[in-house]
Length: 303
Image (tube, rainbow, N blue to C red; front, side, top):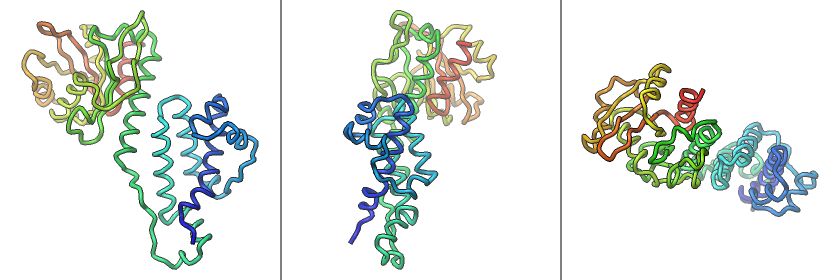
């Protein structure tokens, strides 16, 4: 008796880890850094690097495995993908390959009786909540990279700070919105991110995003920057629809303003308010994902 999990352990994992280790080393990571990311010893990484680990040619030659190794190595190397996210991506592909695919065929080769059996091994959902959450967190990290790498972005941060947020599909509240804990702040001319994105840590920008969605848009991400007339004009000249709301008109003001505007539900747009007693004027850019709204800010205001 041989389980498909044994095929994964014997054929997929050594091959995939060797491929991943090679790609991480190509991106300049040390053996110690690779070992830490993969959860293996440095000696194991050394064996991967010197071809001392048996790899399965069918697994190594599969284009989907190659694409996964490329994608995960890039994300781990640049910090946009967490170790949990990397694990989930690999788990999803493994389950796909177990379902009448590569790993199922290798399993049948090891246990020929399975070829005549009506069996399926699809035990993980490719659209799992964990995978989706990790994808949203990775998207926010990519957006943050766009903002913090842009010269002059710190000058756009309002006194209350900036946040970059992105929501899960079909959110029910701010707990479904990923954001920077504590907001992005200007520290001596540098945009400083105090921590890794988390869910449920933004009330203000997440609330604006959820209000805009309630008003009829499909926006899944938002970022706030300082308001002035030049900022608004720059966005309008770049072709963005601009919608004003009154922050003193109640909690539903942003939702009502978006609902009343003639907006394409799927297009990025600008929502703004010019301030009220004790309320700083703010510009919000909303769009389909965090990198898109981050690029909108950089390309419109900093170039």
